[in-house]
Image (tube, rainbow, N blue to C red; front, side, top):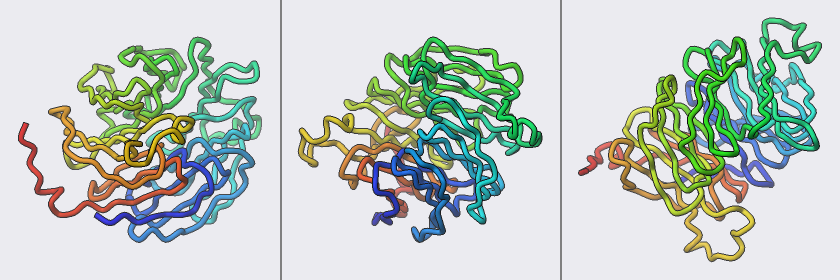
Length: 325
C-alpha cells in the first residue's frame, strides 16, 4: 500500500475533506493556504487564496460548486470551487473553528471560538438570501456559554447540527430555532473531531480521552466505543466496510520528547462491530490531525502535524479480509 504524498502546506494540516464524488480532496492547514487535489493521482488542482491566518476548517457542497473555509483571521469565506474566486466573506469577532454546508448546499453553519472576551457562537446563514451575507446577519445565532464547540457536522436532512464541545458533551442544535434538541455526555474530555457515515445515520466522535465513539445521529444513542492509549484527533467511518480509521498521537507539544518509533503516529483500523483493532498504517512524522475515507471506500487519506497529506489506496487483500471476532 504505497501512499501518495501531497506536499502543499508548510505547517500542520488541520482538516482534509473529499467532495461527494471523491475525485477532489481539499486540505487546509495552519499556513493560510487552502489546497485542492485530484485524489486519483495526488496532482494539485489549485489553491484558494485570501485567508491571513491559520485555516481551521473546510467544507464543500454536494455538487462541488462552492467551498467554505473558516480561519483564525476571524472570517468564514465562501469560494467558487472551479475558479477559486472568493464569493463572500463573513467577518466574526473570534476565530472560526468549524464550518459546513447542509445537504442542499443552501444553508451554511459555522462556529466561532471563545477567545478575547468573546463568547462561542454557532451561526446559520441562508445563502439564498444575499441580504444576510451583505449585512453579515445570520438568521439564527446560538450562543454556547458553557463550553465552546470544538467540532460540528450537519445531521441528516439538514434539520440540525451535531456539535462536540470542549467538555466532552455532544449537542444537537436545531437549524430552524437554534434550540438544543438533544444532549449527551459520553466523553470525559474534549471532542476533537466529529464525522458522519456516508448515509448520515451515524456519527463518530474522536476525543482527547483516548477513545472514539459511534453514535446514532438522530437519537444520539451511544453504539460503540473504540479505545486506544493516546488522544484521538480524528476518526472516520468506512462507506463500504464495517471499519473505522482513527488518527492520533500525543499532543504536538510532547512530540519532541519521543522517538518516531514509539511515537505511535499510525492510522489505526478498528472493526466497527467488534470494536477490535485489526490493522495499522505507519507514515506520518508526527500526530495525525485528520483522517477521511474516500466516498467509494477504496482509499483513505490522512493529514498530519508534519504538514503532509497522504492518500492510501487499499490493497486487494483489504477487501477480502474477513474478521474473526
